[in-house]
Length: 90
Image 1 (cartoon, rainbow, N blue to C red):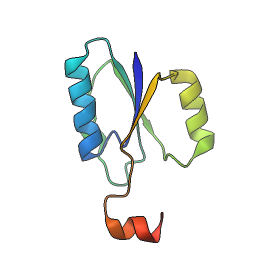
Image 2 (image 1 turned 30 degrees about the vertical axis):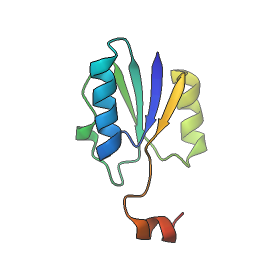
Image 3 (image 1 turned 180 degrees about the horizontal axis):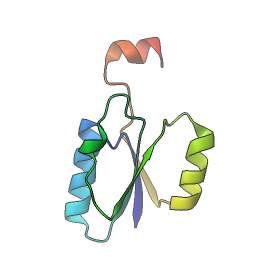
């Protein structure tokens, strides 16, 4: 099973990826993050993880990733880290 995780380099997303890898030995993770707030070092270094540095609103970049990776589920953690940012740039 392959899961696409948005915000995978952020605090919550990276912890979800680690737990999923530990708990489900056959799961593969397609990690997506634009690294504005997250850090790629937070994403586990594993053969079962593919990392894509892109923004969720970039359809031209995201569509080929979805077509190639074919995830069966999406877990969405991508978000602005601060309330002010969310209000200024929803």
